Amino acid sequence: MAQIDARRQALEQRINEALKLRDKERQAEATKTARLKELRLAKEAADRDATAHRPAVRRTKSKTAAGH
Image 1 (spheres, rainbow, N blue to C red):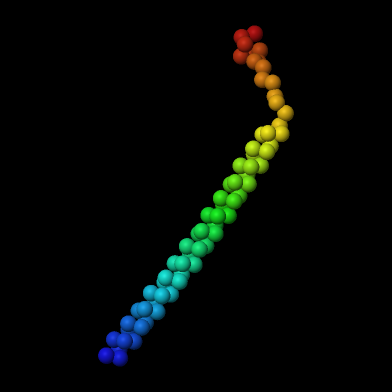
Image 2 (cartoon, rainbow, N blue to C red):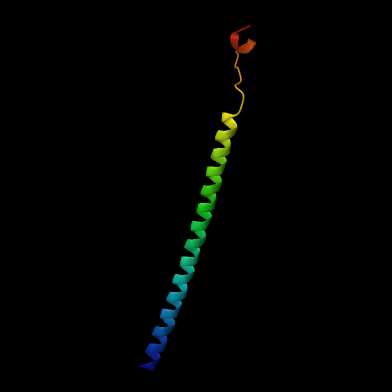
């Protein structure tokens, strides 16, 4: 009976360690995802800001496009 209890305890310990590792991996992935989202949002804001402050450019037809 003691041998069964020892095996059960060892199995529970391995399961608990695996669960802790999985939780750490999930937390790392969540942190990575949050950081990437933060960078994406910052880039989008910078792009919008750059577009808003860019002087308007007049577009004219080139001579080749106009057939000249």
